[in-house]
Image (tube, rainbow, N blue to C red):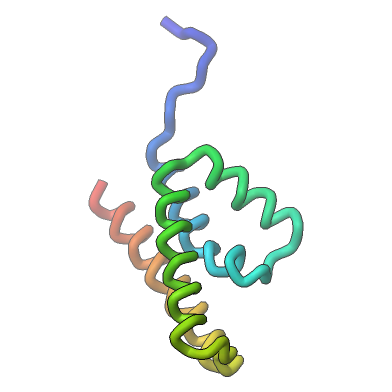
Length: 100
């Protein structure tokens, strides 16, 4: 019996959360455009798990900033870290898909 309300698609939600988690540092570093920022913030507002992850990452960023004297990371290091984070999210998504 259909109620007209779509069923939750847990796989879509998991992939969406993975994408948000991968982009949290873009939001924290204010390195995304207004549309991406609104999309990320909208997801965080409705997803307690991602919001908690965002809070942890924000605190980590603040701690690093305090301990490193607000020195900026070299561009090469930042890019390598960004690529590594994206790669780890892709691996997790691939593992999640093959386990189902």
